[in-house]
Every structure is written in C-alpha cells, then in structure tokens.
Image 1 (cartoon, helix red, strand yellow):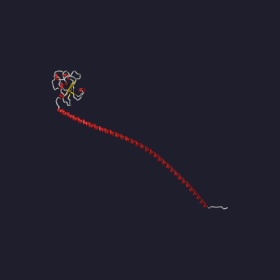
Image 2 (cartoon, rainbow, N blue to C red):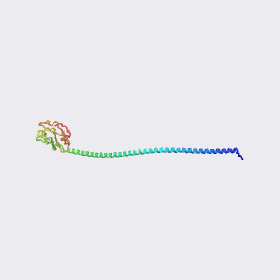
Image 3 (cartoon, one colour):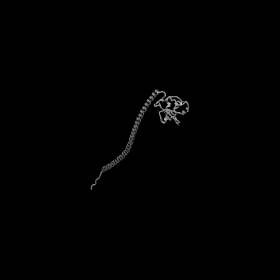
Image 4 (spheres, rainbow, N blue to C red):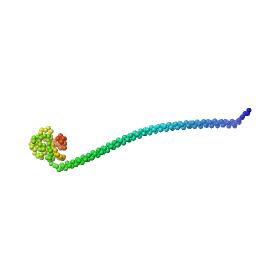
Length: 226
C-alpha cells in the first residue's frame, strides 16, 4: 500500500486555487445580479417614460381637440360677422341711394319753387291795381236782384244799389276767385253808407288757394278798418 503525502506548499496552492474559483463564482453571480438590476432599472425607466409620453400625448390630443373646437367657433363667429357686415353695407348703400334720391328730389322741388317764385314776382310786378275786377265772385245766397259780382264791379258807391247782399244766412260768405296766383298786399272793403254798417261786424278776410269749406280753411287776416 502506497501513501501519498503532500507538502505544505502544495496544500497552500490548492487552497488559493479553490479561493480563486470561489471568488470568480461570486464575482460572476454579482455581475449577473448587477446586470439583472440594471435591466430592471432600465425596464422601469422605459415603462415610466412610455407612460409619461402616453399621458403627454393624451393631454396634447385633448388640447388639440379644444383648439380645433375654438377655431371652428371663431370661424363661425367670423362668418356671422361677415354676413352682418355685408347686410349693414347693403343697408348703408340703400340708405345712401335713398338719400341721394331725396336730395335730388329736394333740389328739383327747390328749383321749381324758386322758378315759381320768380314768375309770381314778375307777374305781380306787371299786374297792379284792383285784381278782383277780373275775378269770379260767388256767395252763400242772394238777396233781391243783387249779384255777387256787384262787390267787384269797381264802383265805390255805398248805396244799397251798388252793394251785394245775402239772405239771413247763419254763416254767410262771399268769395272771389282771382283765376291766378298773386301776391296780395292790400284788401279794401267798402261798407254800406246809407244804413246797416253793423252787418259786417265780425267779418273775416281769408286769403289762400283752398276752396274747402268755402275757403274757411285759408289763413285769416286782421281787418284794420272798413
């Protein structure tokens, strides 16, 4: 029987070899753990970053939707304002046209008025004296054989035979149509001188173009004396 004996140097080398193997195993395990830890950290980071991006994407989508709605509302409001502006512009143009038409009509009427005024003044300058002589007289009623024209025959006699008379009317009137337009500056009345001058008390003189109510609607003038 053979017995193998080892020296102390050999035992020490063997122990060192075993220690190195154990160290390498521990280092390998530690490295694997570090790699696993790093992979876990990276996975967490990726998951966190992905979730963060998803949340941000959703917020951006909501913001984009809100902006789109606001844009559509603003576009609708803008379109409505454009319609209102166009309507106002059309109305303004119509009013401007109506104003111009009225201005033209007013100018034409003013020109016609001025022309008529000039013609009337020319006629008044040419015609002077008693305009009633060529007029047509009427009255509410006739008394006796008298005529309405007796008042404009040019005779200034104050006797009954030269004057016109009405019956006992409640509202008697006498009217003369001058057959043209004149500017009246003076009216002279001659009352009866033989009697009854009070019968003209309260009489009114009215001058105008209206024949309504026998001329009563025309302006009245104050009588200074008979």
